[in-house]
Structures are given as structure tokens and as C-alpha cells.
Image (cartoon, rainbow, N blue to C red):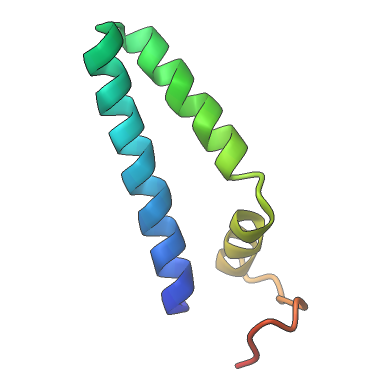
Length: 69
């Protein structure tokens, strides 16, 4: 696993948890906090870089040419 993949995954988990905690703190509603976190994850995980990271984790070949092993 590449270091940039690890950083992307750590960023995703950290920001998702922070959003969940802060939105729960502001609204005091688990449903609203979970809905905001789910919307954020749906938006973030459909980005091009996130799709490449998930693809590499599944073993797909990365043909982007950005980084060659």
C-alpha cells in the first residue's frame, strides 16, 4: 500500500469522525449527524482520487500514469 493511499484513508476516516462528532454536538441528534456523515462520505468517496485508492485496494491496475512502481 502506498503512503499516499494511507494518507487518503486516514484523511477520510478522520474527517468523517470529526464531522460526526461536531454535527452531533451542534444538533444533539444522532440521525442528523449520521445523515451528514453519510452524505459527506458519499461525496468524498466518489471523487477521482478516492476511487483510485479503493480500486488499488481491490487489486485493480492503476493506469493513471501518475506514479509508477
